Image 1 (cartoon, rainbow, N blue to C red):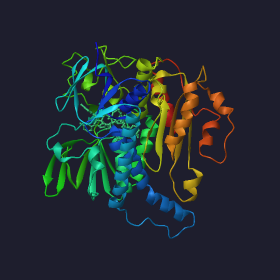
Image 2: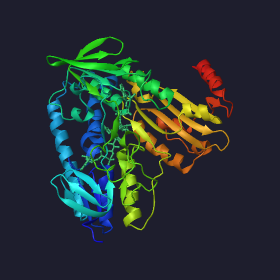
Image 3: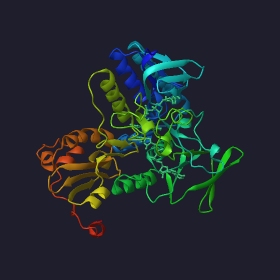
Image 4: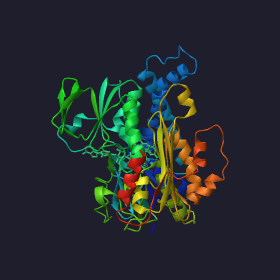
Length: 472
Ligand SMILES: Cc1cc2nc3c(=O)[nH]c(=O)nc-3n(C[C@H](O)[C@H](O)[C@H](O)COP(=O)(O)OP(=O)(O)OC[C@H]3O[C@@H](n4cnc5c(N)ncnc54)[C@H](O)[C@@H]3O)c2cc1C
Ligand SMILES: NC(=O)c1ccc[n+]([C@@H]2O[C@H](COP(=O)([O-])OP(=O)(O)OC[C@H]3O[C@@H](n4cnc5c(N)ncnc54)[C@H](O)[C@@H]3O)[C@@H](O)[C@H]2O)c1
């Protein structure tokens, strides 16, 4: 049977473009549909513009630090959203063009419209064109999810932040995950009066407990009003303002409200269920280790599979898929140890592997935990503290996890991830001679465990908690 394409990719984001470009490089005939802009979430409305906004929002701190180093007149002056936005738009245009060029010069064809799956080997474009393909790769990503409260259409989602005409005077950010923490940090740094409302007792559920507390505290220290144990009940309009009514009966008035209440796979209306593809909770495409769905010709990578929703993971999944199917080089992604960073400010959170909370329930673990004020910011008069934590198996001595809360922690965790993935022991870290004076040298100079969580015993968690409380 002959097909229009060897591979048809739906979605021109991180995972889809990588898979499409690599497959085309192997000589496959590849078509790709993108309904919005090439580059997808990360490039157009995620990692890239977000990180540039983090850089922009750090300027007042840089000025404060300069004053602490003997530049008494250092000031940032007023921030111009217009000037920044014009540069940001130009940069995103450049990246979008690079993504387009990269795929087309590898021989692929882009269809700039929405696609639906209409058969195991068939997609239908929005203009009605039917195309056949030997393999279909679903790489449609995810989309922001609103919480399902009355008036929620009055709230923004993260996509909208990058397209604002002007900055709001006062904003409410709802949620306590990656996006809520990063955007509250950005908006605060750009001079917006920022409130963050989160239903839990500290932000970043699922991360190391101490790190969560440090991020929660830092948000407050930089001037974000953090309101914990609070959920929005409904939104209402009042002139130009939005009134948020909360579940404790209180209400408040904002220029803008932003939901950062999670994302869900983008499979609504994609036709997958109709052709028999099994979807999981929230609409994720269920795939095996090879990113293959239960329909053998249909594969999926990236956020639409809701495995680990990060750009480098989508890219690795897409690349592995293309190597396996078209490059005669079978390989798949190992999701067990993936490093990540939350770009808060001035300190970021970098983490890989086991958290201390997981260590407590598993047991048999030593924790090396150091807290200090780094030389650079301390000299400038800041009280900000760094945390570095290594979680070590008390028998094999293998480093099972690393948590870093500090300046450029994203950069640091990238490097720490290499020995940890190689299976390095604490003694391997110890015999690495420090680079001095750096902050990261603490990672190789922690001599004594700070805590030990004993193996087994169901009640050891309580004992450990008591021990930690005594040390605190
Ligand atoms: C605000 C924000 C910040 C983030 N920051 C980071 C970060 O710092 N680091 C990190 O690693 N990750 C970050 N992420 C997550 C990262 O962006 C995603 O994990 C990554 O983009 C997933 O890639 P993907 O290929 O699965 O999907 P996407 O990049 O979402 O691409 C999917 C593409 O499919 C298109 N599409 C959807 N349906 C159709 C259809 N039917 N037909 C045609 N086209 C379609 C969409 O328009 C989109 O372009 C962030 C996400 C957000 C929202
Ligand atoms: N630096 C990075 O790598 C980075 C940055 C941003 C996003 N991302 C990716 O994007 C994903 C989505 O980010 P996110 O922050 O939207 O999701 P998230 O899952 O990290 O956090 C969602 C937050 O919303 C809260 N929430 C959910 N429903 C709610 C409701 N009804 N009312 C009140 N609060 C509610 C949750 O408790 C949670 O705190 C992340 O999981 C991550 O994979 C990564």
